[in-house]
Length: 297
Image (cartoon, rainbow, N blue to C red; front, side):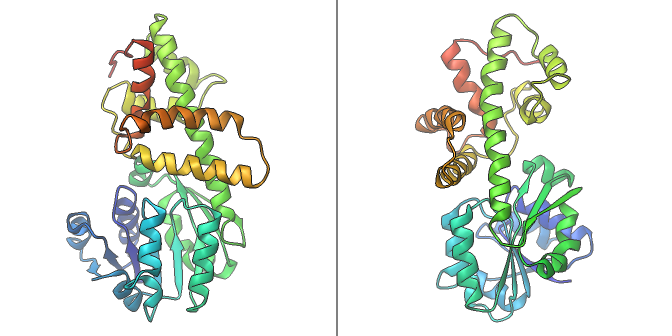
């Protein structure tokens, strides 16, 4: 089945590559020519614009880092909505329920169905094919793309039959991940400054009640080696944190702990961390502590 993939970044490149690995022909588009090159070299077709992609492909996947970028490619003068062939749009981005509602309404006017399909696992999970895939929307539309989105990971969870439900699920996941990263940064600086070997902490905590995604993956992969190369920039996580807290507050849920974690990341953002890897949040804790976790890998 031929499809279009719009947004060939840290997530889009490996996700699109896995679709090609499974035998699906792809048309690709990104404003960065170099980003598309690995897929074009594998005989992916090039779209000249979002509209051109929607003229060529019935199914279009979108992976973009910001709401503004998504809105522009969806509804701009040369946007997807103006294409003549697209009938199904698969959103893999974390954009929140209000934007998904906007997307569904705008695309429905052109006869296009939206499947809400955010993913979790970051660039390492995308490269390894171990993402957690969450989907919501018309059951028939989800079944139509199931063979494709199942290529991204071992777990596909159906959140509901209304687009937006998967956004709530993804934001629930992401705010937990953000809180864990902030708390783990503080805890590891505390432990290391108190004389503990960081590797001992990883071993013990991974087997204990404090286990979380930062201890299991982010610290071993990107912090203890001081490479800080998990692959996702801090502003993307900040966007997800803001969306999650907005969602909670809209539902009347107290978000006290989540607000505290947001302050940790906001502090870093105010100091210019927007384009830094999200694992570099530990550096800001280290500065406050006057201590640096020693490199162990």
